[in-house]
Length: 169
Image 1 (cartoon, helix red, strand yellow):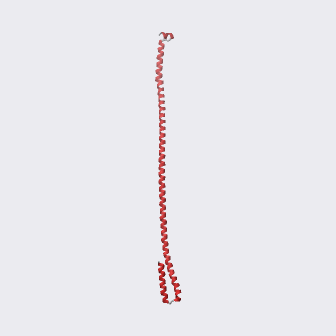
Image 2 (cartoon, helix red, strand yellow):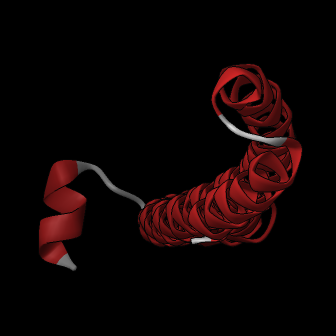
Image 3 (spheres, rainbow, N blue to C red):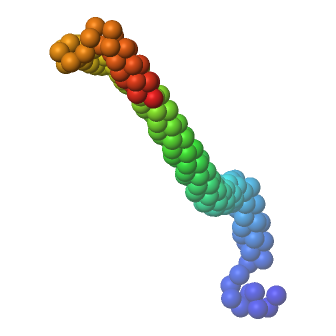
């Protein structure tokens, strides 16, 4: 205690100051530091939550980017498949049209050939009849001066038979 008195401290006053100090520390701790700590802890929690949300957003963005790439790849694949199908369909349609056109042209050619053959036969028959008539008239003129009527008839009938045979062959 001697030291305390040397410095001019009174024990009672020191004790009251110590009690006042402890009361102020208690009051500050209870009403200032506790709410302040609570506010700081809440702020720290919000910052950590924001950092976690940012990390989650980054991961979600990466996942979305991957999904986008996958969707684009699938769409491209589908488009390629569709284009291939369309090309095959166009090729088949083209080939079918060519075959149908070829068949139709062959049919038209066959019909034309048949019609031409029919016309040819008809014309040959007409020409044959005309040539027989002309031959008959020519022979009758030529033979009228040279032969008698009976001989003319025999020669004419034989000549007409030969002409008919030649026309038929």
